[in-house]
Amino acid sequence: MQAEYRQRREQLMAKIGMGTAIFRSAPMAVMHNDVEYAFRQDSDFFYLTGFNEPEAVAVLAPHHPEHQFVLFVQPKEREKEVWTGYRCGVEGAKELFGAVEAYPIAELDEKLPQYLEKAERIYYHLGRDRAFNENLLQHWQRLMATYAKRGTGPIAIEDTGPILHAMRQVKSAAELELIRKATAISVEAHNYALEIAQPGRYEYEIQAEMERLFRLRGGIGPAYPSIVASGSNACVLHYIENTRQMQDNELLLIDAGCAYGYYNADITRTFPVGGKFTPEQKTLYEIVLAAQLQAIAQVQPGNPYHKIHDTAVRVLTEGLVELGILKGEIDKLIEEEKYKPFYMHRTGHWLGLDVHDVGVYQHGDSPQLLIPGQVLTVEPGLYIVPDTKPAEDQPEIDPRWSGIGIRIEDDVLVTSIGHEVLTAGVPKTVAELERY
Image (spheres, rainbow, N blue to C red):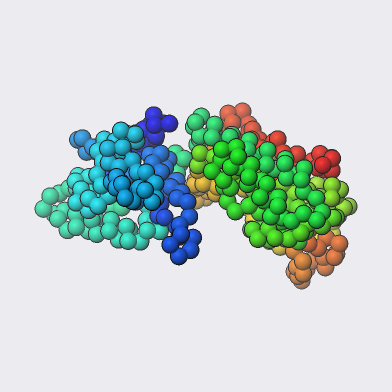
């Protein structure tokens, strides 16, 4: 992978020209008191370096005569490494990660100016580390204070996102291999959940078995907090308590994915706990499935991204009108967003190093067009939240629909000729789900 990281850095440096780009590692997150979560590197930092330690800064300075790629890292300290793990140190940063030069992180303030003073601008994303943000701004202010004497120096700070995130949006062959591994593990876990879910078991039992497989197959673990929502819990979009005992004649919605090599899968399936849909569940489910299949069909290179969501919304709205849950003319209902009490989220998102991966969905008035190599989710749903109050011009909701929540989500790769559903190995037709 080091050759790929180097290629990414070279691509970014070609785009910033006489600028200097600075990337800060992710902070350590505290679970409670002095216990920390397992470290997870900032995705931009990892994308460019593969370096997976905290307290680090990467500098890309294509204009510098010697040091185009510099890492500031924690030095090797035996006493601390015994407690918190081995560090690559300054020499390892060069030997293992390709840094042309490396320094201890304590020398950042001393060494950084030499990589900024000849730059035309600084590329940096103002992140959550406010102390580092302020420190960098002070470096810039000091350089600007002497600009008149030197006639050189960065006259502006520009966010790295628009350039770097456009790069990250199109996945390389190596990235797709990792995503395929993450999705394959997730597919196995979802299929196992279909086998073992039954009335009387608890949501957390299903969660535990799925996450066991994530780790057993070499994954980092869950890509996000797993949602295992039975009954009306499925109407809570980000339900993660997973404590309820599952009952017969209700649905189980599972939204869970594995992280593998820092890349993520994101799958949702909804199926009957007892193996058989009720008539109401089946009717709503088939509407959602039709919306998803038609939305996936819109994943074609050159299509505007919004067409996926627009297609799903129309199918869902038509279904709700046919059932009498909504009343009115389809186009007007969509324009006035009357469907939103029952479908309140978008139909998907980019997927990659982040579960909700970087990349724009719209360029002002111009749509984002789909490009081969992009990976996205397609996840329509319907949620008949108990006690939902209809709008004045809408009918009362028949109680038989109340508490039913359904979402179906797949991970889809845009190809040169259409699309590939990476998570197609998990059943989703009524006939397939009722066989379990």
